[in-house]
Length: 322
Ligand code: AMP
Image 1: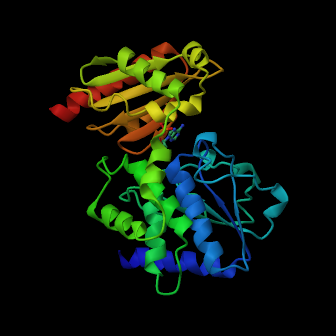
Image 2: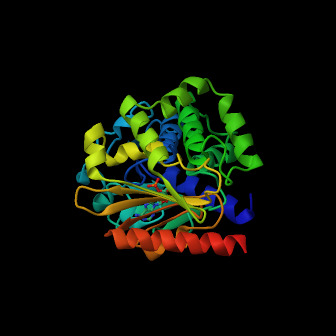
Protein backbone atom coordinates (compact mmCIF):
# COMPACT_ATOMS: atom_id res chain seq x y z
CA UNK A 1 0.00 0.00 0.00
CA UNK A 2 1.40 3.41 -0.96
CA UNK A 3 2.03 6.16 1.60
CA UNK A 4 -0.73 8.20 -0.06
CA UNK A 5 -3.17 5.38 0.44
CA UNK A 6 -2.13 4.91 4.05
CA UNK A 7 -2.74 8.63 4.62
CA UNK A 8 -6.20 8.29 3.06
CA UNK A 9 -7.03 5.39 5.37
CA UNK A 10 -5.80 7.36 8.39
CA UNK A 11 -7.97 10.32 7.35
CA UNK A 12 -11.03 8.06 6.95
CA UNK A 13 -10.50 6.46 10.37
CA UNK A 14 -10.04 9.92 11.91
CA UNK A 15 -13.34 11.12 10.40
CA UNK A 16 -15.12 8.01 11.66
CA UNK A 17 -13.72 8.52 15.17
CA UNK A 18 -14.85 12.17 15.17
CA UNK A 19 -18.42 11.51 14.00
CA UNK A 20 -21.30 10.65 16.35
CA UNK A 21 -23.52 9.54 13.51
CA UNK A 22 -22.41 7.79 10.33
CA UNK A 23 -24.72 7.00 7.42
CA UNK A 24 -23.36 4.58 4.84
CA UNK A 25 -24.71 4.51 1.30
CA UNK A 26 -24.06 2.38 -1.81
CA UNK A 27 -25.38 2.24 -5.33
CA UNK A 28 -28.92 1.63 -6.53
CA UNK A 29 -29.82 -1.90 -7.57
CA UNK A 30 -27.30 -3.31 -5.11
CA UNK A 31 -25.17 -6.33 -5.87
CA UNK A 32 -23.26 -8.41 -3.28
CA UNK A 33 -20.26 -6.05 -3.41
CA UNK A 34 -22.39 -2.95 -2.84
CA UNK A 35 -24.10 -4.51 0.18
CA UNK A 36 -20.94 -6.30 1.36
CA UNK A 37 -18.85 -3.12 1.40
CA UNK A 38 -21.63 -0.95 2.84
CA UNK A 39 -22.87 -3.23 5.61
CA UNK A 40 -19.45 -4.82 6.19
CA UNK A 41 -18.08 -1.36 7.01
CA UNK A 42 -21.14 -0.57 9.14
CA UNK A 43 -20.64 -3.77 11.16
CA UNK A 44 -16.94 -2.98 11.71
CA UNK A 45 -17.76 0.53 12.96
CA UNK A 46 -20.62 -0.69 15.18
CA UNK A 47 -18.44 -3.39 16.77
CA UNK A 48 -15.53 -1.05 17.47
CA UNK A 49 -17.37 2.18 18.30
CA UNK A 50 -20.57 1.05 20.02
CA UNK A 51 -21.48 4.61 21.12
CA UNK A 52 -21.85 5.80 17.53
CA UNK A 53 -25.06 5.65 15.54
CA UNK A 54 -24.42 3.79 12.29
CA UNK A 55 -27.18 3.65 9.66
CA UNK A 56 -27.24 1.94 6.27
CA UNK A 57 -29.21 3.74 3.55
CA UNK A 58 -30.89 2.51 0.39
CA UNK A 59 -33.64 0.13 -0.52
CA UNK A 60 -33.22 -3.56 0.00
CA UNK A 61 -33.04 -6.30 -2.55
CA UNK A 62 -35.29 -9.34 -2.13
CA UNK A 63 -32.80 -11.78 -3.56
CA UNK A 64 -29.98 -10.49 -1.34
CA UNK A 65 -31.98 -10.35 1.91
CA UNK A 66 -29.79 -13.11 3.35
CA UNK A 67 -26.89 -10.63 3.23
CA UNK A 68 -28.65 -7.69 4.89
CA UNK A 69 -32.01 -6.02 5.16
CA UNK A 70 -32.71 -2.30 4.80
CA UNK A 71 -35.41 -0.24 6.45
CA UNK A 72 -34.44 3.13 4.95
CA UNK A 73 -32.97 6.25 6.58
CA UNK A 74 -35.16 9.32 7.11
CA UNK A 75 -34.08 12.72 5.76
CA UNK A 76 -34.06 14.20 9.27
CA UNK A 77 -31.26 11.82 10.33
CA UNK A 78 -28.72 13.64 8.19
CA UNK A 79 -27.99 16.73 10.31
CA UNK A 80 -24.29 16.62 11.23
CA UNK A 81 -23.92 13.05 9.99
CA UNK A 82 -20.77 11.75 8.34
CA UNK A 83 -21.81 10.15 5.05
CA UNK A 84 -19.70 7.36 3.55
CA UNK A 85 -20.56 6.07 0.07
CA UNK A 86 -19.15 2.71 -1.00
CA UNK A 87 -18.90 1.12 -4.46
CA UNK A 88 -20.60 4.00 -6.29
CA UNK A 89 -18.80 5.81 -9.10
CA UNK A 90 -21.39 8.48 -9.91
CA UNK A 91 -23.43 10.75 -7.64
CA UNK A 92 -26.54 9.87 -9.67
CA UNK A 93 -26.27 6.19 -8.77
CA UNK A 94 -26.14 6.69 -4.98
CA UNK A 95 -29.21 5.00 -3.50
CA UNK A 96 -30.85 7.59 -1.24
CA UNK A 97 -28.80 10.42 -2.72
CA UNK A 98 -31.69 12.91 -2.33
CA UNK A 99 -31.15 12.94 1.45
CA UNK A 100 -27.45 13.84 1.31
CA UNK A 101 -26.63 17.54 1.56
CA UNK A 102 -23.30 17.80 -0.25
CA UNK A 103 -22.74 21.29 1.22
CA UNK A 104 -23.45 20.32 4.83
CA UNK A 105 -22.55 16.66 5.26
CA UNK A 106 -18.96 15.49 5.21
CA UNK A 107 -18.97 12.89 2.43
CA UNK A 108 -16.34 10.18 1.96
CA UNK A 109 -16.24 8.17 -1.25
CA UNK A 110 -14.74 4.65 -1.11
CA UNK A 111 -14.80 3.01 -4.52
CA UNK A 112 -13.04 0.72 -6.97
CA UNK A 113 -14.51 2.11 -10.23
CA UNK A 114 -12.51 4.46 -12.46
CA UNK A 115 -12.64 7.97 -11.00
CA UNK A 116 -15.06 9.64 -13.45
CA UNK A 117 -17.09 11.61 -10.92
CA UNK A 118 -14.93 12.74 -7.99
CA UNK A 119 -17.66 13.68 -5.47
CA UNK A 120 -17.17 14.08 -1.71
CA UNK A 121 -14.75 15.83 0.63
CA UNK A 122 -12.47 12.83 0.82
CA UNK A 123 -12.08 10.00 -1.66
CA UNK A 124 -10.26 6.67 -1.53
CA UNK A 125 -10.60 5.31 -5.05
CA UNK A 126 -8.68 2.24 -6.20
CA UNK A 127 -9.69 0.87 -9.62
CA UNK A 128 -7.11 -1.91 -9.30
CA UNK A 129 -9.03 -3.45 -6.38
CA UNK A 130 -11.19 -6.43 -7.32
CA UNK A 131 -14.09 -5.09 -5.34
CA UNK A 132 -15.03 -2.43 -2.87
CA UNK A 133 -15.37 -5.18 -0.27
CA UNK A 134 -11.67 -5.97 -0.76
CA UNK A 135 -10.96 -2.28 -0.01
CA UNK A 136 -13.05 -2.34 3.19
CA UNK A 137 -11.22 -5.50 4.25
CA UNK A 138 -7.92 -3.69 3.55
CA UNK A 139 -9.15 -0.79 5.66
CA UNK A 140 -9.79 -3.18 8.53
CA UNK A 141 -6.43 -4.99 8.09
CA UNK A 142 -4.58 -1.65 8.10
CA UNK A 143 -5.81 -1.08 11.67
CA UNK A 144 -6.27 -4.64 12.87
CA UNK A 145 -4.05 -4.07 15.92
CA UNK A 146 -6.66 -1.68 17.28
CA UNK A 147 -9.88 -2.90 15.65
CA UNK A 148 -11.85 -6.15 15.73
CA UNK A 149 -13.62 -7.81 12.80
CA UNK A 150 -17.10 -9.17 13.56
CA UNK A 151 -17.83 -12.53 11.89
CA UNK A 152 -20.78 -11.05 10.01
CA UNK A 153 -18.56 -8.31 8.55
CA UNK A 154 -16.12 -10.98 7.34
CA UNK A 155 -19.06 -12.91 5.78
CA UNK A 156 -20.35 -9.81 4.01
CA UNK A 157 -16.94 -8.76 2.71
CA UNK A 158 -16.15 -12.28 1.52
CA UNK A 159 -19.52 -12.37 -0.27
CA UNK A 160 -18.80 -9.01 -1.91
CA UNK A 161 -15.42 -10.18 -3.17
CA UNK A 162 -16.87 -13.45 -4.48
CA UNK A 163 -19.65 -11.52 -6.22
CA UNK A 164 -17.48 -8.96 -7.98
CA UNK A 165 -14.78 -11.42 -8.99
CA UNK A 166 -17.27 -14.02 -10.29
CA UNK A 167 -15.97 -16.53 -7.76
CA UNK A 168 -12.36 -15.39 -8.34
CA UNK A 169 -12.66 -15.86 -12.10
CA UNK A 170 -12.49 -12.30 -13.48
CA UNK A 171 -9.17 -10.62 -14.36
CA UNK A 172 -9.43 -8.09 -11.51
CA UNK A 173 -8.71 -11.01 -9.14
CA UNK A 174 -5.15 -10.62 -7.87
CA UNK A 175 -2.90 -12.55 -5.47
CA UNK A 176 -3.81 -9.85 -2.95
CA UNK A 177 -7.52 -10.58 -3.47
CA UNK A 178 -6.89 -14.23 -2.64
CA UNK A 179 -4.86 -13.29 0.45
CA UNK A 180 -7.65 -11.00 1.66
CA UNK A 181 -10.29 -13.67 0.98
CA UNK A 182 -8.19 -16.25 2.83
CA UNK A 183 -7.82 -14.02 5.86
CA UNK A 184 -11.57 -13.27 5.90
CA UNK A 185 -12.21 -17.02 5.78
CA UNK A 186 -10.42 -17.36 9.12
CA UNK A 187 -13.50 -15.76 10.70
CA UNK A 188 -16.39 -17.86 11.81
CA UNK A 189 -18.87 -18.09 8.94
CA UNK A 190 -19.93 -20.86 6.60
CA UNK A 191 -18.49 -19.94 3.19
CA UNK A 192 -20.15 -22.87 1.41
CA UNK A 193 -23.54 -21.90 2.77
CA UNK A 194 -22.91 -18.29 1.73
CA UNK A 195 -22.03 -19.31 -1.85
CA UNK A 196 -25.02 -21.64 -2.03
CA UNK A 197 -27.22 -18.68 -1.12
CA UNK A 198 -25.44 -16.31 -3.50
CA UNK A 199 -25.83 -18.62 -6.48
CA UNK A 200 -29.21 -20.18 -5.81
CA UNK A 201 -31.73 -19.40 -8.56
CA UNK A 202 -35.47 -19.87 -8.77
CA UNK A 203 -36.87 -22.29 -11.39
CA UNK A 204 -38.02 -19.19 -13.32
CA UNK A 205 -34.51 -17.73 -13.41
CA UNK A 206 -33.22 -21.16 -14.45
CA UNK A 207 -35.67 -20.96 -17.39
CA UNK A 208 -34.41 -17.49 -18.28
CA UNK A 209 -30.88 -18.90 -18.16
CA UNK A 210 -31.89 -21.49 -20.76
CA UNK A 211 -33.62 -18.81 -22.85
CA UNK A 212 -30.48 -16.66 -22.92
CA UNK A 213 -28.30 -19.59 -23.95
CA UNK A 214 -30.78 -20.50 -26.66
CA UNK A 215 -31.33 -16.99 -27.98
CA UNK A 216 -27.89 -15.42 -27.75
CA UNK A 217 -26.69 -14.36 -31.17
CA UNK A 218 -22.95 -14.58 -31.66
CA UNK A 219 -21.28 -12.61 -34.45
CA UNK A 220 -17.73 -11.36 -34.86
CA UNK A 221 -16.83 -12.08 -31.24
CA UNK A 222 -19.90 -10.35 -29.84
CA UNK A 223 -22.80 -12.04 -28.07
CA UNK A 224 -26.13 -10.26 -27.82
CA UNK A 225 -29.54 -11.11 -26.51
CA UNK A 226 -32.61 -8.98 -25.93
CA UNK A 227 -34.96 -9.89 -23.10
CA UNK A 228 -38.26 -8.13 -23.63
CA UNK A 229 -40.98 -7.36 -21.10
CA UNK A 230 -43.18 -10.11 -22.54
CA UNK A 231 -40.52 -12.72 -21.69
CA UNK A 232 -40.03 -11.33 -18.19
CA UNK A 233 -43.79 -11.30 -17.60
CA UNK A 234 -44.23 -14.83 -18.98
CA UNK A 235 -41.69 -16.05 -16.41
CA UNK A 236 -42.97 -13.77 -13.65
CA UNK A 237 -39.54 -12.09 -13.38
CA UNK A 238 -38.36 -8.51 -12.95
CA UNK A 239 -35.38 -6.58 -14.24
CA UNK A 240 -33.46 -7.24 -11.00
CA UNK A 241 -33.68 -11.00 -11.61
CA UNK A 242 -31.47 -10.63 -14.70
CA UNK A 243 -28.46 -10.26 -12.37
CA UNK A 244 -28.23 -14.02 -12.29
CA UNK A 245 -27.94 -14.49 -16.06
CA UNK A 246 -25.52 -11.71 -17.00
CA UNK A 247 -22.60 -14.08 -17.40
CA UNK A 248 -24.42 -16.85 -19.25
CA UNK A 249 -22.75 -16.04 -22.65
CA UNK A 250 -19.28 -15.89 -21.06
CA UNK A 251 -18.16 -19.50 -21.68
CA UNK A 252 -19.30 -19.62 -25.32
CA UNK A 253 -16.26 -20.11 -27.56
CA UNK A 254 -15.57 -17.08 -29.70
CA UNK A 255 -17.48 -14.63 -27.49
CA UNK A 256 -15.16 -11.85 -26.34
CA UNK A 257 -17.77 -9.34 -25.23
CA UNK A 258 -21.50 -9.45 -24.88
CA UNK A 259 -24.58 -7.46 -24.02
CA UNK A 260 -27.83 -8.48 -22.37
CA UNK A 261 -30.44 -5.88 -23.27
CA UNK A 262 -33.33 -5.92 -20.83
CA UNK A 263 -36.48 -4.07 -21.80
CA UNK A 264 -37.80 -1.82 -19.04
CA UNK A 265 -41.45 -1.02 -18.36
CA UNK A 266 -40.99 2.40 -20.06
CA UNK A 267 -39.76 0.78 -23.28
CA UNK A 268 -36.07 1.64 -22.80
CA UNK A 269 -33.42 -1.08 -22.52
CA UNK A 270 -31.03 -1.60 -19.65
CA UNK A 271 -27.78 -2.70 -21.27
CA UNK A 272 -25.78 -5.13 -19.16
CA UNK A 273 -22.39 -5.16 -20.87
CA UNK A 274 -19.54 -7.56 -20.19
CA UNK A 275 -16.17 -8.47 -21.72
CA UNK A 276 -13.38 -10.97 -21.41
CA UNK A 277 -11.16 -9.07 -23.86
CA UNK A 278 -11.56 -5.47 -25.03
CA UNK A 279 -12.35 -2.65 -22.58
CA UNK A 280 -16.00 -1.65 -22.99
CA UNK A 281 -16.54 1.11 -20.43
CA UNK A 282 -15.98 3.89 -22.98
CA UNK A 283 -18.70 2.37 -25.17
CA UNK A 284 -21.01 2.34 -22.14
CA UNK A 285 -20.14 6.00 -21.54
CA UNK A 286 -21.00 6.83 -25.15
CA UNK A 287 -24.53 5.64 -24.30
CA UNK A 288 -24.93 7.56 -21.06
CA UNK A 289 -23.61 4.80 -18.78
CA UNK A 290 -20.25 3.70 -17.47
CA UNK A 291 -18.55 1.15 -15.27
CA UNK A 292 -15.48 -1.03 -15.27
CA UNK A 293 -13.42 -1.99 -18.33
CA UNK A 294 -14.85 -5.54 -18.24
CA UNK A 295 -18.32 -4.89 -16.72
CA UNK A 296 -20.36 -1.87 -17.61
CA UNK A 297 -23.92 -0.70 -17.96
CA UNK A 298 -25.94 1.82 -19.95
CA UNK A 299 -29.42 2.49 -21.28
CA UNK A 300 -30.54 2.25 -24.92
CA UNK A 301 -33.69 3.93 -26.17
CA UNK A 302 -34.30 2.01 -29.39
CA UNK A 303 -33.34 -1.13 -31.28
CA UNK A 304 -31.10 1.09 -33.42
CA UNK A 305 -29.17 2.15 -30.33
CA UNK A 306 -28.79 -1.51 -29.27
CA UNK A 307 -27.45 -2.26 -32.73
CA UNK A 308 -25.06 0.72 -32.46
CA UNK A 309 -23.66 -0.73 -29.22
CA UNK A 310 -23.26 -4.17 -30.83
CA UNK A 311 -21.45 -2.55 -33.79
CA UNK A 312 -19.13 -0.67 -31.43
CA UNK A 313 -18.45 -3.97 -29.62
CA UNK A 314 -17.56 -5.62 -32.94
CA UNK A 315 -15.12 -2.82 -33.70
CA UNK A 316 -13.62 -3.13 -30.20
CA UNK A 317 -13.13 -6.89 -30.77
CA UNK A 318 -11.46 -6.17 -34.12
CA UNK A 319 -9.11 -3.59 -32.56
CA UNK A 320 -8.36 -5.94 -29.67
CA UNK A 321 -7.43 -8.78 -32.02
CA UNK A 322 -5.31 -6.72 -34.42
P1 AMP B 1 -24.68 -4.18 -14.03
O1 AMP B 1 -24.85 -4.84 -15.34
O2 AMP B 1 -25.84 -3.32 -13.68
O3 AMP B 1 -24.31 -5.17 -12.98
O4 AMP B 1 -23.47 -3.15 -14.15
C1 AMP B 1 -22.13 -3.50 -14.19
C2 AMP B 1 -21.30 -2.32 -13.77
O5 AMP B 1 -21.55 -1.26 -14.68
C3 AMP B 1 -21.66 -1.79 -12.40
O6 AMP B 1 -20.73 -2.22 -11.48
C4 AMP B 1 -21.58 -0.31 -12.55
O7 AMP B 1 -20.30 0.10 -12.24
C5 AMP B 1 -21.71 -0.03 -14.02
N1 AMP B 1 -22.99 0.55 -14.43
C6 AMP B 1 -24.14 -0.11 -14.69
N2 AMP B 1 -25.10 0.71 -15.12
C7 AMP B 1 -24.56 1.94 -15.14
C8 AMP B 1 -25.05 3.24 -15.51
N3 AMP B 1 -26.30 3.44 -15.95
N4 AMP B 1 -24.18 4.29 -15.41
C9 AMP B 1 -22.93 4.11 -14.99
N5 AMP B 1 -22.41 2.92 -14.64
C10 AMP B 1 -23.20 1.85 -14.72
